[in-house]
Amino acid sequence: MNESPTIYLDADACPVKEQVYKVAARYEMPLVVVANSPLRIPDMAGLTARMMVVPGAMDAADDWIVEQATPADLVLTADILLAQRTLENGVRTLDFRGREFSPTRIGDAVAARDMAAMMRSMGLTTGGPAPFEAKDRGKFASLLDNAVSKMARLRAID
Image 1 (cartoon, rainbow, N blue to C red):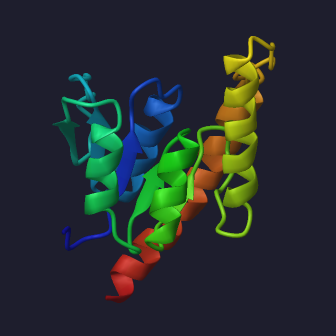
Image 2 (image 1 turned 135 degrees about the vertical axis):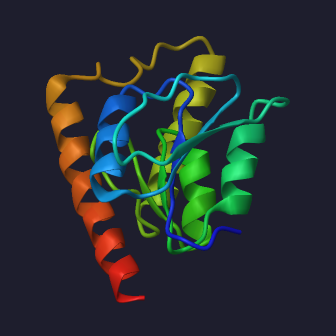
């Protein structure tokens, strides 16, 4: 377990890595970049980040994040099932489009995901997610900044 509040980034296919790096550096908040293969982390003033490569099964990185993250931490992911698991552990979880997963609405998100998967398995077209746009990036950056700012204030009180 970690001692300081930490940001965990589910980095495989993450479209907002640069925003995460900038916010983590601004608040000097520890960041763990978790992926199935190595990714480049930029050298930035104030950025304390480490790469955690978790090889193996498709969900190995998710399992690792669930084992590590505590309620003092923040998880960033687009994976609804990972979000469900982190919320069950009391961990604040944001998606890459600038929305916060919540315990009261995660069941609906999981059900919609499962329904879409079932429809695809039957050969039906579900349309998939909307294209990622600049407004999504901006919304995410704002939500992330607010969340990490709060973490930094709480860290200063301890």
